[in-house]
Amino acid sequence: VRLTPSQSRYKVYIIDEVHQLTREAFNALLKTLEEPPPHAVFVLATTEAHKVPATIISRCQRFDFRRVSQGKVVELLRRILDADGVAYDEDALFAIARAADGGVRDAESILDQLVSYCDGAIRFEDVFDMLGLVDYRLLHALCDAMLDRDVSQALRLIEDVVVHGKDLAQFVEEILRYFRNLLVCKTTDARDLLGLPDAEAAELEARAARFKLTDVIRLVEAFAELMKGFDSQLSQRVALEALLVRLCRVSVEISADTVIEKLLTLGGPPA
Image (cartoon, rainbow, N blue to C red; front, side, top):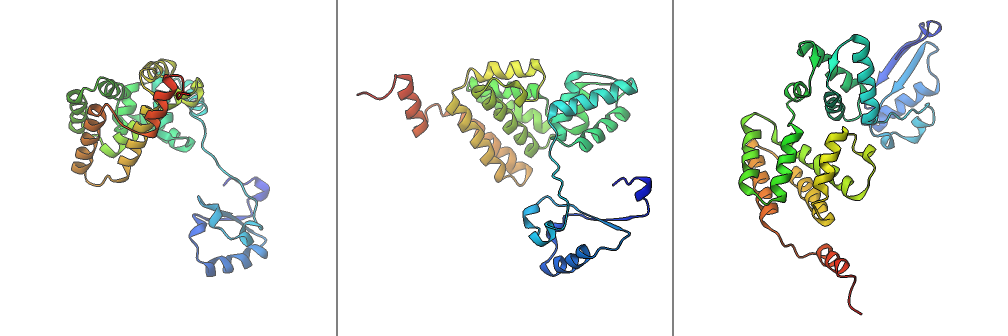
């Protein structure tokens, strides 16, 4: 919290995760907020504002902080690097923005580490090496293997991820994000929803065209469900491989969505 010179006489008290206070603690805090010391400024921070009693909220000024779009984060990183005279790949900035997930402070922290880590220029590969992320090209390859129902290639890709010491839980999260992007490509032409470089967005759109909408939805749901049961590294690998085998090999799935899609293809139900 930055105070102006005229405000420097104040003491700032920050209560983080204020929603975790007990009812008794809230009651004690309420008295202080009703009659605050003239020298004090209280800042109450929480990620669950609905758990804070209305008696507390009514005595505060409320400011809601939201995630920043990837495009704006990339623009900020670009300005910082241009001002410092540091060379960079455009794809690297998008990779940093995706890793920060809307957090400006996280993006700047990652950038600061990369400037120290890299030798004069920030490259796309440097971001993935430093953060332990999986290259998006591997995700494209996994998607192609699933489209081709190539189980051997899918399992080889999992082996490559494990051999390089990547975290499988994070990998599944990246897969889920990948198929979410495919779903966006399949249902809308708004590239700004992807927050990706044009070349990568074009590759996603090309692959999305090869999927049925119901298949993409099924894949998103399957990987979202898989994330719930991950514990040990071995069980993560077995569960992921089993799911990929099932998704690659099972070509027919009888469901309401499948029936509806067939009816739409045929022009609707018979009269």
